[in-house]
Length: 433
Image (tube, rainbow, N blue to C red):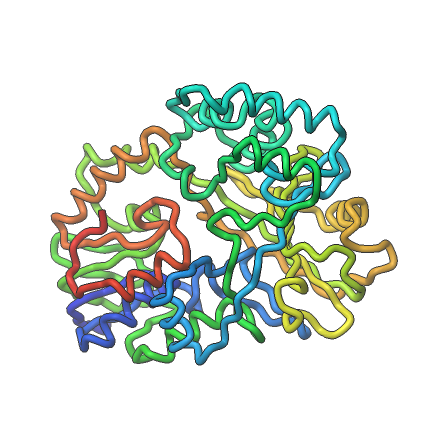
């Protein structure tokens, strides 16, 4: 039995965990990272198969912050390239530009009129809502809600939209003006609005370039991969690993999904039901590589219609030509679920769908396919979330446990948010707000 002692233990070697480690390494603070997988990276892992590069779905750096861009360039040796978003929506057998609420050009006139009439009715009215469902109708009107917002979000969340709060919408969903709608109904417009209108991605490899760049600045002896935790004694500050190692610590930083942390620690009886109130969305990603030419220059496409099992398809070859062999194209195809995973993206049916929507031809040869299952993909902002997280955070703070990151703090956040913490972190271990 091996006993180890560190001042600070970080749980999880994804972007958030490695970001913390990078900071502590710079400050010469005694630490170690515990990661249950065989490799680091979390959801920013990349897979290299027969010349194809696959990520765990679409992962990009959305920022125009100069300090952040300088940091990325510094650690990666300028490997990241700026891209302008080229995104579309497939509806009624028509590809429209993103976002739908400002781009209806190409759709039948009756649909455009329905969306415009509904928008005009609500533009000058007071917005009244206490849930996401009512927010959509209050902001966009009946037409846009009926044609895109409702079907897409019902398909995506698979959860009652009236039970979802609106804490997150302002950052991620664009609100149109009448002028913007009219312009996008008359001609095809490449929108310059939205948090993701510009993004950065590695020029030659996958998104794991960011992980490898951070890792180069961290003492590898402090990263314990393939180290699954059996339990954590939070009163005596001891971690028991399944490989029989025992690790003692003074501070604990958790970046792993909150329900997984909760499963590892003992807690009072009155805390037992807290995790049952947290809801999340899981995602199945089907990566496909074909021999063939690109038929659509979109980088990713949204599919609101229920006839398709997937909600989004990304085109790796339009993000970087270096992600595919010469003469090839590849896709990431995403479908969501909330409970026990099933065969939600059958390979043959998905290929037929790709032919039907014009992304490939029947004669294209499938060369590679890889499925990735993401248990914790998106946090659902249900009404119990905020109070529950506050209780959990206060309880853990008393045990010298800090929650950090999207799945540990149980909130929407981006790669950019994780990287900004490295730049802004003062060295204190205060609980994130």
